[in-house]
Each structure stands twice: as structure tokens, then as C-alpha cells.
Length: 163
Image 1 (cartoon, one colour):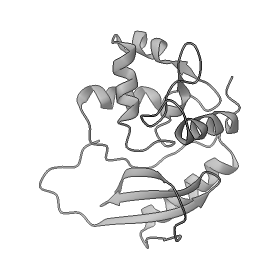
Image 2 (cartoon, helix red, strand yellow):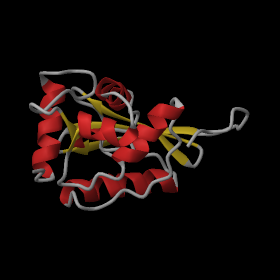
Image 3 (cartoon, one colour):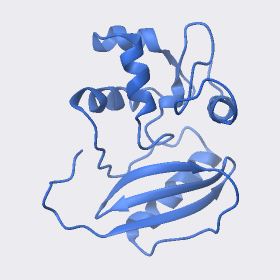
Image 4 (cartoon, one colour):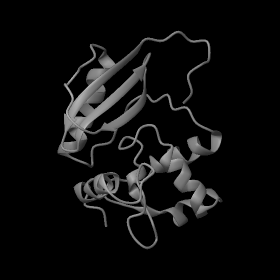
């Protein structure tokens, strides 16, 4: 999941308009590296790469049908533990949730460590950290426990009809 240190890559960014507002998708070489949920108004911007077109199509497909799976090459930079958590997140099907505690038990770690890895997720939605909830409620999203970020998490769960 990590890019080799000495590899020269072309960086590009695509900005898409979605039901959540604008999303920025960053690519490096032939892999997706980051997805940001942007606030405010932005201008739609499409990179000319095949990966950009593929990413835009898959994100659009997800918003039309949340059961659609992402199949994009990712170059995620994180600790070994974070990468392990992010792989586990990708195995949670759309429409289902896990609690931080359930995921922690599965990974033989602490709930807070799972939450910290979720917060550090560079590609939310694609690596679905929104599918991890608190045992007593929604839990946080993107480092926030209330406000617009948790509203986004709730919207994504409602969109997927999570139980």
C-alpha cells in the first residue's frame, strides 16, 4: 500500500460534486492517495488520467448504489497498525456496521486505537471508516464527535441503510 520512497510520480487532483458536497480525490502515479470532503463551494476539476476517470465513476456509482464496491488502486501511507485497521474496514459490507469494540476484539487491540486509526484514514468513504460506530451511538467521524462531520457519517450510514 505504500509507494516506494524513490519513485518519481505525477500528482493530480480531481474535485467532484456529490450529494455530500465537493470531494477532492488526490492521485500519485497510478494510485489514489487521499480523499477529502471539502466545505464550501469549489469548481469541479477533472484530471485527464484514466485513474481519475475511474475514481470519479466509482464514487458516482457509490452515491447511486451504495452496494457498489470500490476497486481502485490505493497507496495509503500509515503505520503497520493503521494499514491493518484500514484493511479490516474494507471488509465491512455496505449496510453493516461494527463497533469500535468489535473491531478491536477482532484485531486484538484497544477500541481507542481503532478509533485513532479510523481518524487517520486518508480515503474515507473508499475505506469505509463511517461503518464503525460507538457501542452507545454514532461515535466520531474524521476526528469530530459532533457537527457537520458526524452529520456526514450519519448521512453515509443512512445512504447505505445501515442496521
